[in-house]
Amino acid sequence: MDWLDSVKWGDDGLVPAIAQEATTGDVLMVAWMNREALAETARRGEAVYWSRSRQRLWHKGEESGHVQTVHELRLDCDADVILMKVTQTGHEPGIACHTGRHSCFFRRYEGGAWQTVEPVLKDPESIYK
Image 1: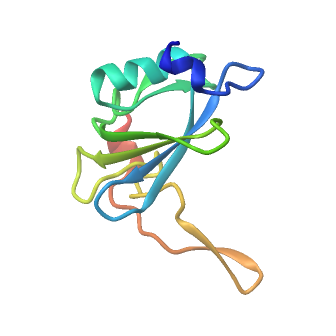
Image 2: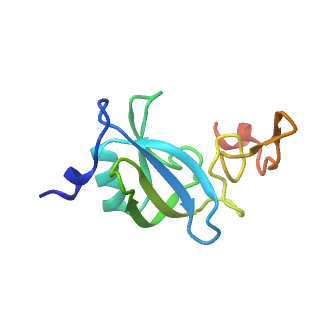
């Protein structure tokens, strides 16, 4: 059996994929993969996602240069979520978020509201030209 057949793909052919920094354990982002994206990620050793907005494969860093080197792929107990342990490259510290932040999870619930708790490391205008 093909290893990709073990994944429980959604009705839309997608599965959520979590990018976690291998060294710190920080959750950097969540995106989507189809079979082709997961196979290409395994082949390249770099994260490739399915972009729902672009309706095409998206090699993380293709515009920004902020590539995710994949060290490990894991499948959760229900076989419906992928976890990737990655090194975020292209900037120090690594930038995973299109807002120019290290992580897409830069807001924390505090005192009844979402508070921004992580700084912008690089202006997104200078990243995406």
